[in-house]
Image 1 (cartoon, rainbow, N blue to C red):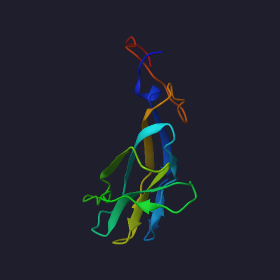
Image 2 (tube, rainbow, N blue to C red):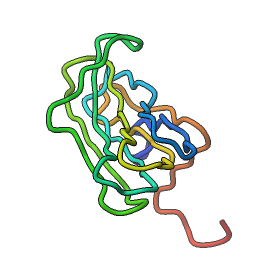
Image 3 (cartoon, rainbow, N blue to C red):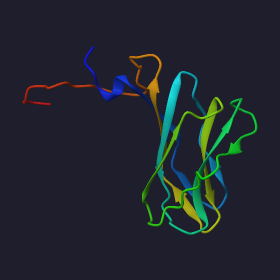
Length: 139
């Protein structure tokens, strides 16, 4: 097996693009069993001081989630990619929460990338390929 990033991470789409709105949103919960960290990546189409993204965790997928101290991120530019990394959460399930309080906002797709798994290789979600030093030529 050749070492590639796809063998070492699990990428999940956790929130599809959401239409204009002002209500808060949450991503799908991510089960961290067997993983040390997760990186959430997404964007808010409208930057506003009242719009933010934060992380929360819970002991159960459908349980009560508690915000994680210091995890609030407020993008300053429309469509700016937001990245929030969480290493070694203290509970099994984590999610990102999107607050759209400052302005009517469209959200872009959000992804969760789990890393440092205890078991490899990882089976990719969706369509995926890995290449190691391929020859030049027709794709």
